[in-house]
Length: 288
Image 1 (cartoon, rainbow, N blue to C red):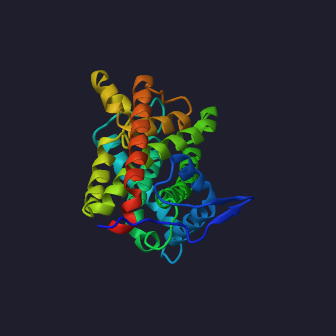
Image 2: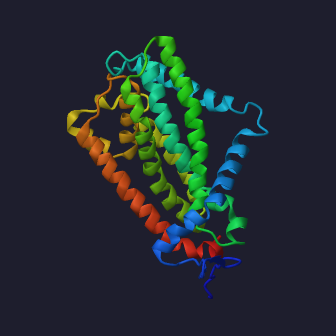
Image 3: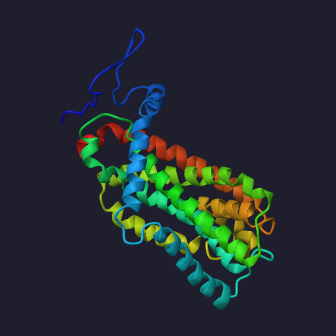
């Protein structure tokens, strides 16, 4: 079987050098190509945002209704029925919604990026560009949703008279951590999804399962001390705890051994996802 080799439709001239873009080139050249194709990234990101919010019945309202509905359900189940404690004096709905922000960012990137290769099959078969741009561009939609949900959370905090402290200034760092934690598994599943299409049916189940085992509707502090470190190895736990540490005004404390473990696992998954994606990237056009 002849291997498909991708080449840029035309070479670009930079001074006296001719730059030829091919799949499978050295890593330094590959990451340089990402910068050269930054306009394509912006175009794809804008397209994904437009598709999400244009020609829909409720548009942006969906980004508000979904977390609020889930917040009400989780508050009733975990706060009223199970009577689990909150973080200090934090009202339980705020505890849940702050966890929802982190979970929806993580799950949206993971879900959308994992299906990005299949959804852009025609584009992949026509031209060369770093394929990692496709899953990366889907993260912009999740960040737009996060901005909308953050406004909702701040409005709810104002309603309860519970406002965040100075730690909220560090929230962008934890947003970046959430992106890294979700992007590694997303790249891994996106590459697997090209070859094994049944992953698109498995992923929704895994996300639904992850919603209930992650500390979205409850505080991770309720986990027994003997198990908390191992529980915190789930990168989502570190993401949610980090968001709450920033947003709950000192009422939430980071469990540092578990948070360091979450960061280590997230970094390992990010490396694995990029390595696996790059390994099979040159064959995508043949398989898809």
